[in-house]
Image (cartoon, rainbow, N blue to C red; front, side, top):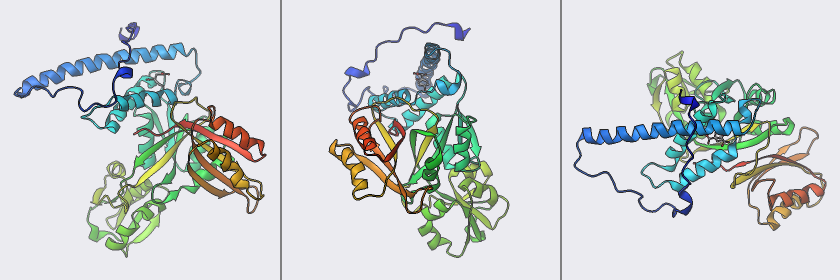
Length: 389
Ligand SMILES: O=C(O)C(=O)C[C@]1(C(=O)O)C=C[C@@H](O)C=C1
């Protein structure tokens, strides 16, 4: 039986001594081969790839055994290790496939290897076809089991209750800024951030008939209306805009009438049988949404990490300076700072701060100790690998 085979010892990694991304690793296949000969080459390579994937899967099982008896699938998941594997994939890549294509393939391989224990359960803002679902698949691969949920709050609740192993929630969009409900959930939730996902977001106008002249009302999430505001002003200035809880929910509603349309991703169009009227229609071509992976436990450093902090500051002169100065003095770069009103008191603010590094490693660890000693309430929301491709 395939499962009983003992995996062979792997050859040492050659990548360590290899210069980074030389112009071309191998010559192209010889010219002048006919179709059958080229396909024979591909068949041979497929056979090798398949054998190697099977061998890798057997080693991944061995890793599972080496971790000892663990209670659940979530205990086998190692985001820091996955990030290291994927960074090596990017470092080794000489083309012709793009880094993000190879990363996607290797994520799927790891997703399948991990699912041998038991698939991870991932909560996200549903229904089927949302960008949150795409982000969850991008990060955890198709072997994970998706749980579409009704709201961002519900994603937090289901992860906290242990019904989902992890959740994927949007936190900011490159054009529209913060998704405030997500940040506000961290004010009361004990959950940790254990990953981030960046997703290029392309919005499309979708409808049952596919004809722009039929459209009198448009369903979409308020963020999608904002991302496509310029296009809508030019092309459909009189259409009624109806906000809904997610773009996929808009697509679900728009499938029932010819005079309705939705703004959503192509996957929502496919899920609900809608035609594309126009797209992409986002005003900014680099439209990207950043998602956070939320879970119940912290993870060790991966070698290139980011840390999200939540600081509640007592009102005094220079209070924010006192938090930022220990970071700046150690040369720790800050990628984001955001203030939100605290639930506890009027005119009290909490600061969400993203910095480079892992909270268990110098120099960030020392800076955090110094900030905590000043008496401000400091919580590490999580240290996690910087998003890859
Ligand atoms: O290295 C591990 O700890 C594994 O379990 C193996 C593996 C992999 O397929 O490479 C699978 C799942 C983990 O999330 C990380 C890596």
